[in-house]
Image (cartoon, rainbow, N blue to C red; front, side):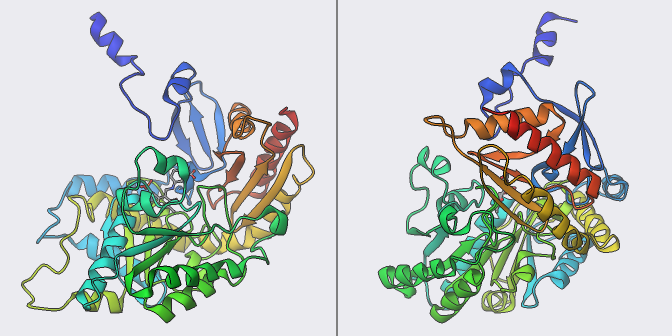
Length: 442
Ligand code: PXG
């Protein structure tokens, strides 16, 4: 083999990895080469228990034959269908099926390819809606501190994670943020929804008083903030946000990229927390992670307001080459069928008490300062090392991986969100590995 080819095959430098310490990783790569059920296989042939459903997406477990087959079949049938002024049946089938499952007022679905695209789509639809109704001054968005809404310009701006924002400046003007709801003094070691904190939603009234409702298009929040370490909404908090938005004609967007498709023990966070948004973003579990795809659920009023004017006019100047990609539609339809046939969302709800007890059994381990849980999700927060924040969390992640457990880490919090097919023995194993690792860390 010529030297140049040999070098290129083994060259780790070309790939600029996303959200990764590239230089550190490339010194000691962690490579996954296979996945089935609850387990990954590494390039060294080691089995790793998937404690985070890939990245919160593989809700039905890895390598589901039904999904693989649907993708394979569709690839043979029609690889790609022109998406603008043309379409194909699966995009309609998927959208109707999804709309049936969404909260009752969300009857329409816009398809995209990633959570970030879904978020930017939802924000743009909110702007277009207000403009269509003659309220074009409503351009301001309200996000929340510690929110994560992907990495588009809009999503970065409404997001509330300093590291994601500071490299790039403001991204989008006219954005403000609600305070986050994390409070260790009031709520540490809560089981399920914390009792304290619904009054934090009242800060939305302050922002309305500051900017005037007539300038605010939408509020966007994750029903449960995933990326910044599992921040579960206090009892009554989302209801209060809903109330204030309704009162002031502000749209409420739920970003359900993580909470969608059974993660909290119901189809969506909206159902679990019993609060209806006007727009909802979804991704990840939509295809069980098998093909990139995302969606925005849209309520009737918004859709109807934009379906005005002569019918030959394009109502929304927005869309993607790969909106409703046939392979993604095939994967999503198969995934939704598995979720339904195997009652995986109910399964999640049924396992929740066992999961809750299991993760809270780590309460007295070394340096554990909080444990939070809902559905099949848990955040375990470790005390930061003096002067070296996030290093204990990172060491925990690395050590768990070495011991055969994959989890997510953000700062000094580690997050667990296994596939919803997890068995009780695997829950025990997860907690055992994590507990031993936590004890072993300095
Ligand atoms: N919204 C939410 C609520 C998300 O969690 C996105 C939007 C963006 O999705 P895309 O598909 O553009 O990445 C996300 C993504 C983690 C982790 O471990 C979370 C995400 C992605 C990667 C890692 O916390 N969330």
